Image (cartoon, helix red, strand yellow):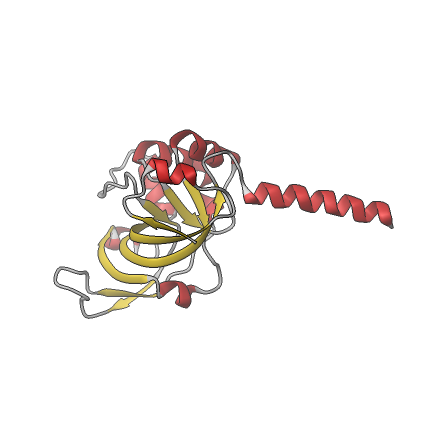
Length: 197
């Protein structure tokens, strides 16, 4: 297990390899379709994500007593990843222009995102899907929220403090994608099985 702590430096991120298991700690922002579309349309993002982590997640948020003075009065009840491929049209430019280092989601992303990770020193992390309540345990506090009224809770940009948020490096900064590797190996295995029949 490799511990990653915010801010995530380019040097540390470039050392990661596809298949590494990592523990993400510190600041993470959620962002889905509406945040990406706003950014693509030239709208400002109210936070500096340079050296940060963007989590494709539409959390279930409930009222809570603040964890510490100044903390937001919300708690993440469920926070599993959402399917990342919807952000393919936007993510490469988002990585380039914001300087974000970690993209967290599920299901993988396309070749343009993989190329952006390689060029700008970012990685795509696969979070576990189907365990949203368990994933929420890694969220220690909600620090802030942006666009709540405009986007609604699921699409808002939530600023989270996480501890031991475990993921797998699925696309690294060396141009390696686990999704492509598995697809190649599966196809080769399938062809060998067909020949054997």
